[in-house]
Image (cartoon, rainbow, N blue to C red; front, side, top):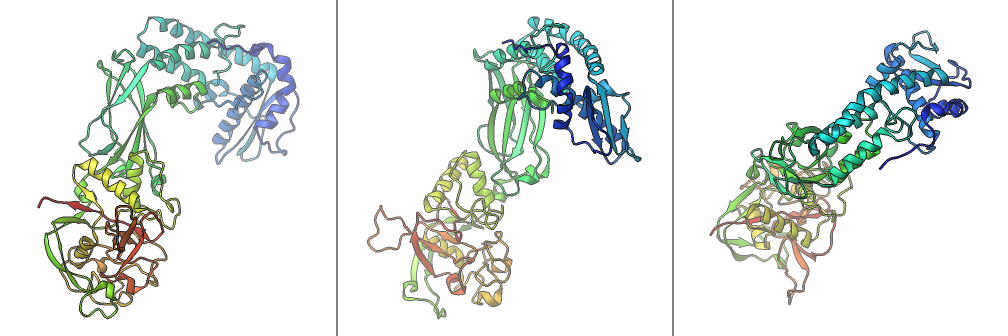
Length: 536
């Protein structure tokens, strides 16, 4: 696993001379008023709001330009090398500007290639002398100790821009980094990382831990790991939450606890926890270090829920008979809405339609690639808006998943269950009463003068019915499990939708009104809410 470079860095002096000028133009954008570049020098340029910032960035640019030029002498496609702030101070703390403007906010540095090579040889020798004993001691360490120490050494090399430069011996060609990477590769391949909590809902009381063993099942103790939290990108609000990264260390049993982020942006959200080796914590991490972390990584997907009943609110509805269909004083009702008696068992109805945030949590934790139409459209995808672009099968799959997660039975309501819930024991045209939506301003419908697309659920409090159910009229049509078509059979995919939507006029918002539509179709004005079965 050794890698060789065609020329040692101190044997490429002639080539460095020839490409130094080219390199400085590639990596920096000098102010032509500051300096006229000459062959045989490395240049660095800095700008900043303070002279200290300008000076530091100029030195950093010079170091990174010089190191990258040397690496590209043998590998023209090598990426630009970056070094840490500490490395800049260790190398060129005393270097004076070659030229600067009056306020020292725009500076240029330069150094002869020969001077740089001499300085860099001294720096490399010191670095090699400090690393060599640590490398030699690796053979006597446990797997975890080898990885932890190797991570430390590779980080030092990366921070100093020496991953592709520092050789095991002065004047040799074998890179220190390649020897250490070979050791790490063998160990990482043998690691098994597992999560204690499976994908699904977690509460603030959930204890999350990871366990690390080798492939033979032996615990790996004392291993430093990286724990990386992020909010699901399926949420429109995901960008508001910063990633949370921490390190943890396994105990004698190979386990380590992981704390859930305390930031408010992580409460009641779908999240991913990724645990891996911790090679790439440095901003200067090499490609190999990043690969070790990627190869060892495992993840779990959770839905954080502080209080399930508070987050998923339902209203209990008693069993019994009620008057379905149009009320006597509804002059706009058609024959298909004729009043009739209907009976239901006891059930509970969701207070609001299923939101984008709730549906995103389901997609996230099930690792589904089936994202609804309009889910990336900012007119419809905000967290608190009702999910749209879902078919009956999509809605049923969501209900089945929620049932599996909780142990309760969730499903789509029948038309009668929906209507009974909307009436809330009242004989009214609309959930809030008989007042026309244009006057009442109780719903999101065509011409409501407040929204031109779906509204966040519960936006019209005046439209809530006597049982506290929101958006039973307007906003989105809601799927039911009922098929009203004549001679309906098991193959039929037609379904009744209720409630009207933001695209419809007041007439369609009446409780008794319904439409029969193809259950396989999706649209921006159809969503769903669930019922929960309760003990009789």
